[in-house]
Image (cartoon, rainbow, N blue to C red; front, side):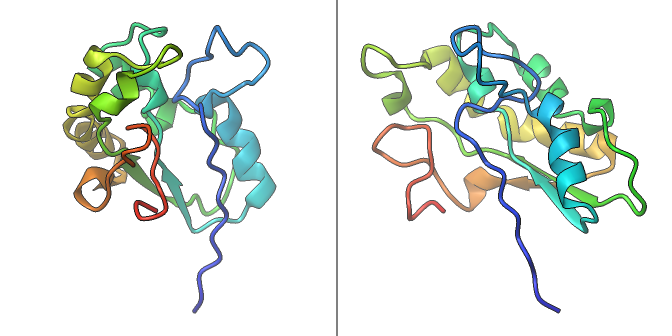
Length: 154
């Protein structure tokens, strides 16, 4: 059989938080997930890779808060039968380049926390009965900003 991949990535999306500096963007993954799922049902697998933006100091979140944002049972799932298999993916770690420049949205604390996300997400995936992938083991962020994947990373 062949795969049909539907990509719904968006820069700035968080697990469950809204950015107070981007009031009109509605970037909470938890709030958007039901609509995204309903628009594409039926689905066999759902891959969720969020959390990088939760590392911004504007949210003042700890590691447990970010990991809890990936607790998929707390997302308002649409009714679907059968429900898709879920793969939780921890994003690759940030680099110090993420903290550079006047409008840099990350700080050294966020960079340090990003290195701990994989372990925290693995625990959430186990509790939630989901599959887990540490993206940092297969890719890394680009040198250009220390946050996003570049062409080679994708």
